[in-house]
Length: 186
Image 1 (cartoon, rainbow, N blue to C red):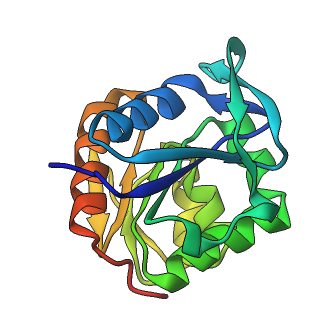
Image 2: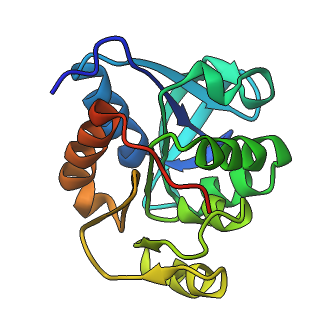
C-alpha cells in the first residue's frame, strides 16, 4: 500500500506521549509514503516517555494545533501514554481538532490512552473500540462499546490497546489511510 500524496497529522503532548506509540506509527506511515506533520499544543520540542514514567526522546513539533485545520490532512494519529493523553485532552484546541476529524469523516488511528481524546471530543457514542484496559469505563460511560482486541476498526476509526499491538495497529492505519475510509460522524 502506498500513502504517496497523503498528509497525516500525529499528535504529541509537550511531555508524556508514549515514545513507541509516537515513533512507530510516525515511521510506518512515512515509510508508506505519507507526509507526516507533528502537531502539538505549541511548537518547539516535546519530550516523550517510556512506560509512562521513564524519559524518552525529544521530538520537534512542526505546527501548533491552533494553527492547523482538519482540511490540511487526510488522517490523524493519536498516540497514547496516560500522561500525554491527559495533557492533550485538557486542551480545547486539541479536542476541537479531534472532533473536527471525526465530523469530517477522516480516518483516525488511536492507541492506548489516546481514546480519552475521543471521549473528551464526544465522538465515542455508538462506536466499537479498544484501548488500554483502564480507559474502558470512560469509553463505556461515553456510550461506546469496548472490546479487548489487538486492533479494532469502526468505519475508519482504528484503535489498539498497548505498545504490544503496534505492528497490527500500524498495518491497519496504513490500510485505512490508503483506502481513505471515512469515520461516520457520531
